[in-house]
Length: 159
Image (cartoon, rainbow, N blue to C red; front, side):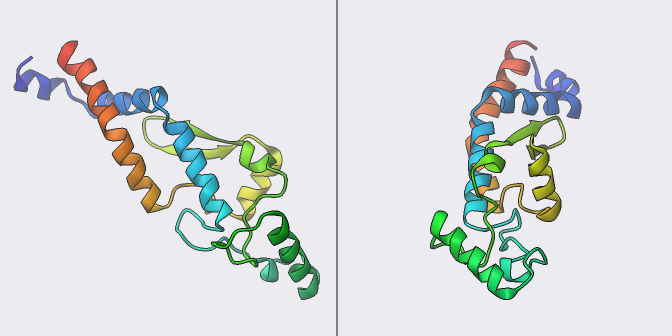
C-alpha cells in the first residue's frame, strides 16, 4: 500500500472503529474502573476536586453533629489519609464500586453504574465518575502501543 492509497482509505469512521476495537481487546476496562475507584476512595471527582457535598454540607443530615458522627464512622471503616474525613468516598459496602463498568463506543468512554442505587449516587455526585487528567495521560500512554499494532493490522497488512 502506498501513502496515497493509505491516506484515501483513512476515514474518521475507520479510525474510530480501530480505537473501539483496541479498547475492547486490551485491559483498559480494568484500568479505567480501577483508577476511577481509587479517585473516589481518595474523595476526588473527575475534575480532581473533592467530592461534594461534604457530609457537613449534606442536607441529608439534620444536624451538624449527625454529619460529624457519620464522617467519623466512615473514617473508621474506610480510613484514608489522602481524603478529608468530611469528604465522601461513596463507599459503604462496595456495591456501588462493584457496579461500575465502562461503556466504550466510537466517540467516548464512559464509566457507568449498573445499579439503581448507583444511579442515585451519580445524580447526587455527577462528577464522581470519569478519570482525572493524570490518569487519562497514563491511559493514553498505555493505549498507544496497542493502537499502533491494531492500526498496522487493519491498514498496513490488510490494505
